[in-house]
Length: 526
Image (cartoon, rainbow, N blue to C red; front, side, top):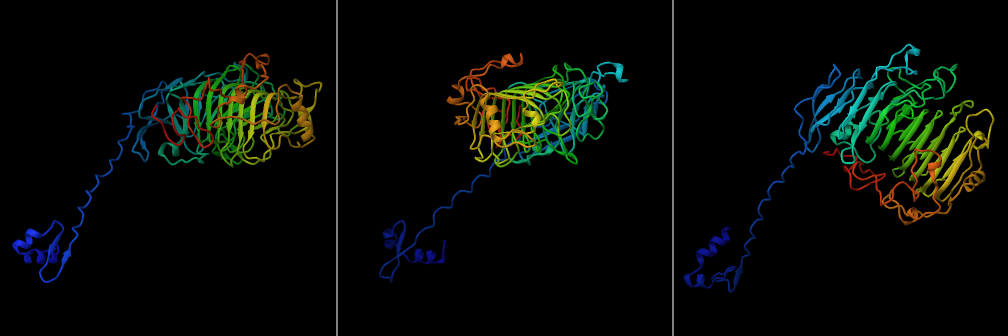
């Protein structure tokens, strides 16, 4: 109360007091009233905001695995939300078949180049002086494995991986920065990736005198700290299986121009099973397939900074239900295909077939699809959309890529399009090295059945078919090409009646799927 208030109250007579209102007091000799405004009651001090309780608490310790080396307990790691995990480092080489169990509050760490088994050599017997160790690494649904820098996982020849998540519990390979909460929508290149090394035929042999495609033709994993080879002459070789797997923020530069991708296959055979794999923000290619035989379905490549799908050195690849979407202003081509890699003609020639795809190009670049080096390539039942507004859809390089036939080769050099819809401001561009001119590339495209050059897509949410894709006619039947393929009634990768992206994926700035594990920048509770 102020001094003036005390004075006025003391000067009021009993009568005056009786006349005093609630907010005014008559003061003698003033000839009027002095108005005093009582200050409003102070607002109550807000209760302090409660810090959310951590949703993840660390496991008590590391589990026992069959490999006698065991796991190394490295204490705990936490993020800014207070979530905390027990960290268990794997051996640098698994010498015995082992299982990485899913345990709440536990992460596995790759401490460098981690090999599954010892390289069994290019032959599945002792003819190469090596014997198989037959080590299998099993990874349970919901397991999260992280790494940093040059660390990566390599499944060596003669050994296998069993990494099969589920639609509600995917397996996640990611980076340390992702775990501690440092990543944003443009993070990338924070660790190596996953490499599968097999014994199927490859070209570009490490030993120049070796015959491409023979048991003596091997290649070395790019950037491996210790020599790690792939290749052989066993087409049905198996490196195991992977499904419902996310591979985030890979592509660390291992040495010079050597970078790994989210998923790299080298000479894997037809016995290897791959499906439901998501690559997120690889700083190099999303996936790269070096030779061998690759069958993969339900593949997502989001935000790769080089090519989304890179295929070379004689690979025979079948892919169905493929989404490739770039981040705004980042990335090179969606497809880069090569068979000779600038060298003299080699066999086996690459032969890749993709059915039911959705390609979204968001960076102004030289082309969306580039096929060169004598590669045989078929695109069917798909949509190519240039969101940049200035990138030509198709480029075909090198004379050998467009020839009709050439005696002595194991394949006919052809590029094939059927039921492909182009939504590009410029559909074709000139190739190089005697390749197709824009007009010749257009003629190759027009020779197919059901292709459209002035398409307006109705893709929703960056991946989901709209009415135009679901109602497109005619549809090419890929089952005649290989028993791997399924017949469909639509073009594009995903129809609303069968949205195979739900549950196991994560959302990035390149493409978001909604009902899934959340943002790729965050670590889910599975």
